[in-house]
Amino acid sequence: MENITLTSSPTTPYFPEVIFDASKGVCEISGESYMEETYKFYLPLINWLKEYTKEVNKPVELNIKLIYLNTSSTKCVLDMLEILKDYEDAGGKVKVNWYYDKSDPDMVDEVEDFEAESGVKIELIEFN
Image 1 (cartoon, rainbow, N blue to C red):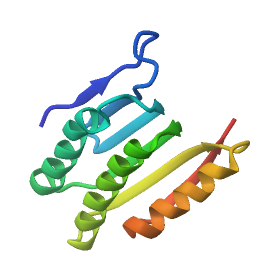
Image 2: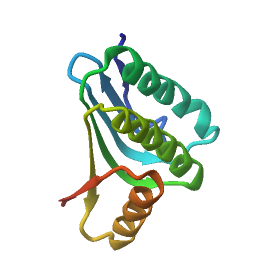
Image 3: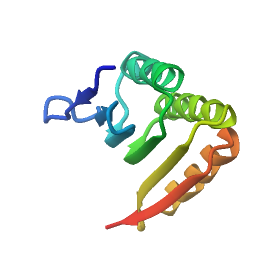
Image 4: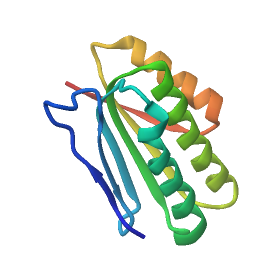
């Protein structure tokens, strides 16, 4: 399986950085996510997770370090969490960490909503 690496730049400030590492089973999304055509951006990530959980069948860790995400990004992240929940229900090992700025209590509420909707346990981790 191929890795996915997408870097953010000053010309794409609304796109998060992405590192999906198939050999380690570690997926990371960081930065801000409020681009146009959000689903077009996230579809390869969603498909990668589907393929990884079906074919590789190793533990997977998703680290989310988004400081802002719009409504359409929220839906895409929820889609990814639901894939991981299905994988976990089938016996796969899943770990989800959500890093948040402790000065942003709204993000904690949002993560709790993600957890309730997806059924996946999400570990909240503060950063400064």
